Figure 1 (spheres, rainbow, N blue to C red):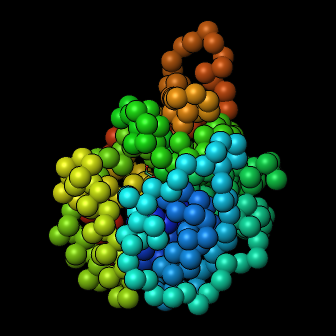
Figure 2 (tube, rainbow, N blue to C red):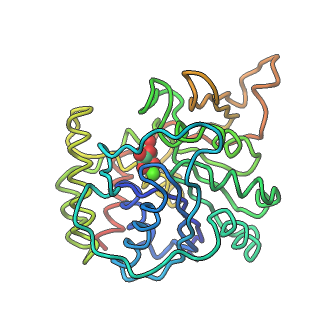
Figure 3 (spheres, rainbow, N blue to C red):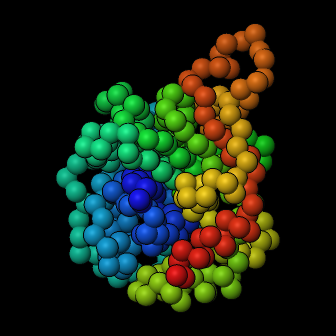
Length: 314
Ligand code: BDR
Ligand code: CA
């Protein structure tokens, strides 16, 4: 039986890789893609989501969502990392399809009403769509099977500020609501995603098997790889968003800890995720709000990228 998911995304190079995986994996049923601002403006995220499904020859509903953070002023999109088009500044084929009429938050609410207890939300961008769904219909939290979030960092520091990871930094108020909503949730943050690397040769093997999608993924990877080379002298790219998908399919590759998350929403540390382990005694109950979650703290990074490749070259 395949796992039904709604994939909430801001494609984005590593989002595109993850979308390729979920479309290729027969053990995942993609109920829909919901889009958000983040790596790109939301209209571009929607265009890219539609394009990726069309290049893969799949018909998957795409619902457009958050165009801006809930509270904070948006920062410029990181076009030096993902390109202004989100896919490495390349000549992209045109798109024929359109987004559905419902918003991303409405799509999440409606689909989970049709299939209560079945759908997992895999969120790999800023968390405004999930926060809005919770606000419009708080009972959505009881209908979702689980939420898997690529975002945050506990021990590795941030990738935007010294303490904040990009998805959480982009909308800390949304993240605070989502990470403390009290639903079954797994956080897949930089603590594990930075331990995974898709090397150039591996990417070539993957792209060669993707048909029309292959050249688009390869060119976007090449742009992203240039960023990694300059920023951290890495020969390869961290497939952050695909690691969240890997947790969904192979949780045995990960070590998790159970506890409570808090998100800093104001000041220079905004976007920081702070973890209080379940067994950490404290007299201050504010550290134990919002329900217990699972946080990934370690991963067999080589096995994770081996699995990604195995799905994409099968
Ligand atoms: C996350 O931020 C985005 O740039 C990536 O797509 C990923 O979701 C990594 O911090
Ligand atoms: Ca992303």
